[in-house]
Image 1 (cartoon, protein in one colour):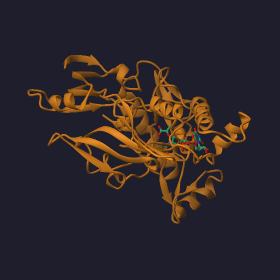
Image 2 (cartoon, protein in one colour; image 1 turned 90 degrees about the horizontal axis):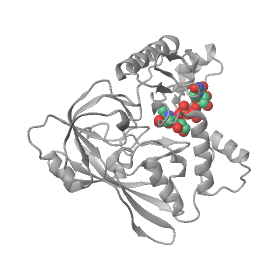
Image 3 (tube, protein in one colour; image 1 turned 90 degrees about the vertical axis):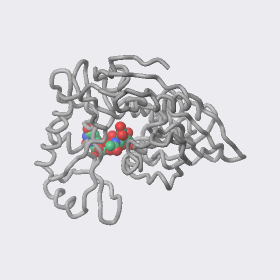
Image 4 (cartoon, protein in one colour; image 1 turned 180 degrees about the horizontal axis):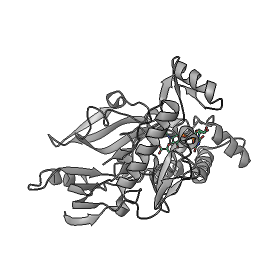
Length: 337
Ligand code: EPU
């Protein structure tokens, strides 16, 4: 295992922030991970997966463990389902494509989400009506304190909207090494009711879509709205969509007749933060090397050499303005480091 010193993390985070890692090591298997955790004389550890859900606002004065554990395997299968395990360092979208090549269904709506498999359960990634938890069976994580592998079932993970036990009570205590999914082999259940998917399939002239068609539709929609991190630095949605009481929503509707809302329970409504930010006048605004994406106001972008602190200040300004205008608090979805 080679330990590198003072290396730039610019190509290791999708925001493209040029922060330095004091020490950096690439981890290729669980044994190496255990060894790295026993190294003496280093400050804290910092676990780096695909770097797609973080904003680096400072240099990392720690031993950065870059998780590069690869491998996908079919654990078992019957007529109808396959149990598939993917290691943490697999790129998420490449894993989805592997599933589609094998005609395994369940992940097609999650096509083109940046990041790696190991980070996916942490925030229960979701898009177009589907969340990771819908196909998740379990994951194995190395407990940092004991250096033992522990299995977490779906119930253990306490999945919620962009949330899990790994963001709450287990935060920073484990390193997810692999994730196991239950995927369909035939009679796939398609989720095309999310408005834009049905529209996109109609545009593509597809009446009876396959899982591969749904994936293609999702890819087209994402490419039309979300910036490609390889071209413009970003971390997807910077904020979570806030959930507010129905009474507050009804009051807002008096002043803002077109405010969208999606009921999540009998008493609460989810409001798209993108709409609030657009209404607050930030959509497409550019400040030097950073700004708010022109096609999706929920996404903050780095056009070149912005630093994390600048983007954080913009995020705070957006939060303050949204609060003043709508009395709604919008929380960051990305991890601010
Ligand atoms: N909207 C606007 N202006 C905008 C953006 C959105 O008015 O600039 C309103 C529109 O009313 C639109 C609605 O928001 O109909 C919903 O927009 P969209 O379908 O783009 O979804 P979202 O709620 O903004 C969420 C996820 C995305 C995910 C999409 C599709 C969160 C925080 N974000 O965005 O996830 O791709 O749904 O399922 O839940 C991510 O997490 O990084 C991410 C991109």
